[in-house]
Amino acid sequence: MKGKTLILTAFILTVIALGIIYFHWRNATTDHNTIRFIEPLDCSDNEATTDVGKYNCSYQNKDPDEGWQTLSIELSNAYPDYSVHCDFTLKNIGNQNDTIENITVSDPTENLKWQWTNQYAEGFLWKDINRNGAYDPGEEVINITITDLVGTELIPDQTMPAQIDVTIAENAQQNQAYNFQVTITYEEKE
Image 1 (cartoon, rainbow, N blue to C red):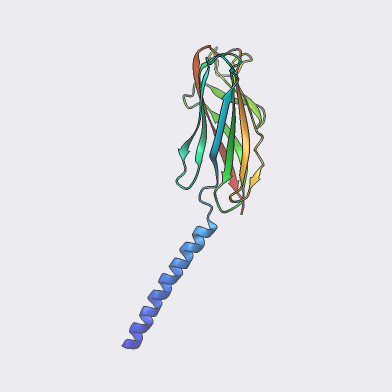
Image 2 (cartoon, helix red, strand yellow; image 1 turned 135 degrees about the vertical axis):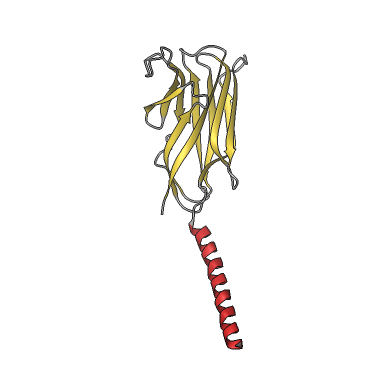
């Protein structure tokens, strides 16, 4: 009887040990989070003496491990040719190499639509002024130039500086508030 109890105990301990080993192996080979925005974030505008336009650049959607998922830029009292420059940083916080696949620029209020003019490097947010459901020349509100990040591979713990330049277009309404967000989509390398 003692022999059967000893064999059963050894079997149970083996199953528990294998479960623990599998858990640690799975966590070591699974890339849970990956590319995130991290500090520093440094922004400035083109107003040297007169301070009419206002801006707020921030990271949002905090990742529980490290960094943020979204870069948010808010402009108020904006007027044509008002511009903001932001230096931001990306980091691969995962444990596998990751390649940036896409950059998404969006207006959380959905009043403005995004269009690339130079894929993943330049584009603009536009407003459907004549309400025809399509972009027409002259509907540009915010011109944006961003570091071309698509195709860039980051190894674990690697950081990368990048920048975004924002300029209010001639067609924008003066003293208007605008808000847009930038997110990064990535592909995990096996």
